[in-house]
Image: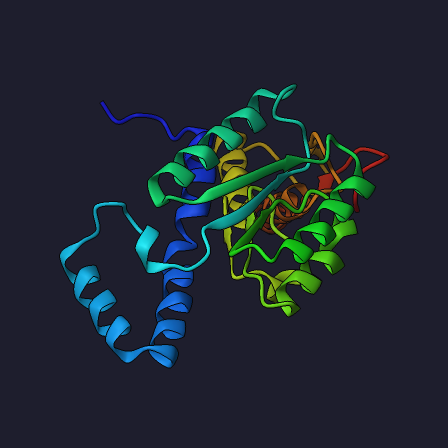
Amino acid sequence: MKQPFRKSRLATIALLAILPAVTLSACTKSSSTDNSASSSSTAAAGTGLADGFGKRNASRNVTFITFYDPATDAFWNQMLSGAKDAARLGNLNLNAQTAGSDVTKMTDLVTAAIATKPAALFITFNDPAWENAACDAQKAGIPVFAFNVPPAAAAKNCVMAFVGQDFTQVGTVVGQRLLQDVPSLKAGDKVLCPAEEPTQQYAIQRGGGVNQAIASKGLKCTFPADGWR
């Protein structure tokens, strides 16, 4: 039986996604300083390495920051578990930190990570408040990877990749299923589109996908008073 996708795999995929990029950086550095060392490294890479990716990269330190505290949230505990699994697979030194739902602390953690110059920085964009800090990390030459919640359009070019749902596409599927299952819907009917965190990008994009799907019937989402429009 096919196993369901576990949330911990999302973080595992996110960390494993950096290994080719980190490896490329290390190989480039070797070739510019020692040609013989580069040839030796390439030969070893072709036959596989006993310690995974360890010998192919100078820096093994990566920073993984969660906005919510994994110790009090089961979802984020799985995220952290996945990150630890990936770190073991790739021989990475994982520096895991959490902001504990504090927006200011999250921004400070991202800024502090720049000073440590990790091989990669993994963050989730639950709030746009730390997007500038993430872009500063990218400008400092630190590869930034987003997971679970993507950055807004303004910071999209500051991340190398996003690991998670295509929320707009998912919302479109939800909207299409609604029209299929409730064929009596007509223009003017109200469609409530609630979200746990309506101001976060996942909710904005997924709700937008629902709107795209139901617009063909003259419908649109109604959002909570404290949500987005």
